[in-house]
Image (cartoon, rainbow, N blue to C red):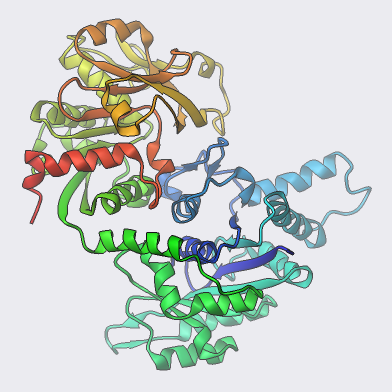
Length: 537
């Protein structure tokens, strides 16, 4: 079968949720047993997301193959329950870089290299390669940015050219605000977006419209008129209780059948896949319990910084029919010793991060959780600080620290990896991607994963210092997982209660249909603990 293409473009404004729409369309194709993968274009000139501050661009998502990519790749994996690859991420930096490299090698044989056709042709080639290499029925292309932006205009032109060569469906995600003063849905911004899209030479086959409330029929009629499509092809994307409901919401409107028809596909659905998805949604909407999870971090002012943490908690909740709520706590707020911000939480998570800011507050929070018996999960930085806290307060090493935060500490319980000491470049140089780990029998980690050999994704430079391994184990600290060669510590635990941490990022491999074991264990422990009872209604 010839590979076909679905291209999703956003208009009016950024932040409408193209990633969720793209993921939902991928899930619809999966329900119908068609092989589909996404390609994401981002216009920035960075090679990848690895050097970006989470406050600027949300969390950096890491793939098995070590690629540091846009956070939308997390959505793709969570919906499809499949691993993505780095070549599915196309940035302006990658695109221009490949053109310049080829030109320097003499690859253009004396031509004057231009945006059209050289850059646009290269963009098309990169997309087609994903389809060919994976033998796909459909490649779903999410175009980052907003129609009308200078930084994605050449890529939109490439998509216009793609449609001249390949069967291509265009979907425009737009926005209809509701002005409280007049009490009606306004279509004028969307109309302007349609004009920009038409001026680019692209006419949408479908319009998906974000709104707070359901789209009114008269709103659909007006949008359809200006987009040159029938009213049925204007699809509501109003606010839902969970993003995972969107594929089902699309199906309620017949979008799935219209899309399959547009692609020339059959309409035989896999009822087993659909029923499994519906069961997860039912657990989300009808939980049997409720628990509040505290997230003590460095970037809590922007929850997208911890998007995968939030989703991994949600996946565990869907697995257990527990409704988790999140309490975001800044590490700096605990540095003066006021622990009241932790009152009533059912469990505590300390996620990853870089830099010294807020560290002492996080250590105080971890100590509070250990001494009060609050279930605890530490991730990357959260594991390192769990080691520092234990070294200080149980092992008697009062000035124990990480050499990242105090290069002159006498007890660098956490230290820079030897191979990192000579690294100068920042991009793509950390311990990245999937690493195998060996778990120790009889530990919490082993019980949660149910096997000895596992694999999780990593993104860090500092490690547990093995010079302190014997001392800390003598004091009751449990080292429950190491790399396969036993050289690097991967999992640690408290001897009593539920307190576990990992140097990896298990949230990155969590999916709705396959929740991360550590998060399932955390919620289960929180739901049965005395502290969780105070957070329930």
